[in-house]
Image (tube, rainbow, N blue to C red; front, side):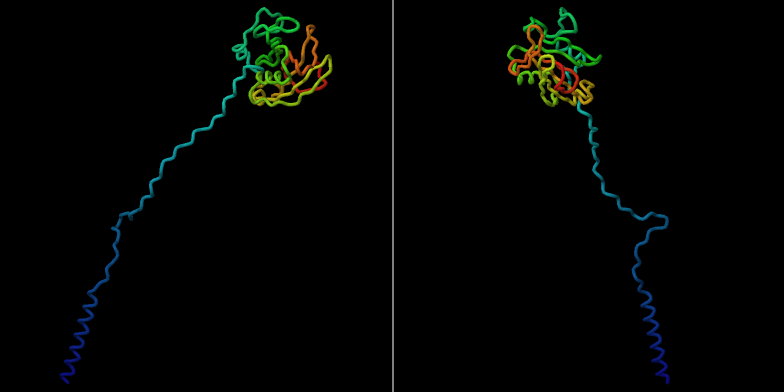
Length: 214
């Protein structure tokens, strides 16, 4: 009996020792943040600074020096003939069937811009050449329109044109319309339409009208 009690006591002692050893091995705890401290943060990636696009500006209005020009613009490129009677006349003296005359006569304005004038062309100017000369008197974006022949009070051609530049400048009609009368004026000033000989063009506000008076 003593032996059995001794073995049993030894078993209890051994079991107690194992329990004590196992309780002494503690699992590693995760790191903790000290009380009151903020957790670490990850900074956002740096961004590349951007440059603002320059503000767009409207293109400047092209200068007008012929029909539709301001009086200052017109006078800067045309010399007035102070000896001519009547409406202002400008330019060099040219020969016409009715005698010598300034190149541009009866130059009129609406108080701000030139809105009508008569130009004398050299003898033998063809219709195509007269049209080229007309376009040179108008802004570059002028669009040609219809060409009609009128037999009212003689005969002549009426050529319609429009220009956005004239419209924006308040010259011509509401949409920049102008009409050009083309004819051969004889010594008495009587107009006759001759496609091979146009010596007079008149540029004024308006639209084409085949029944217009020459």
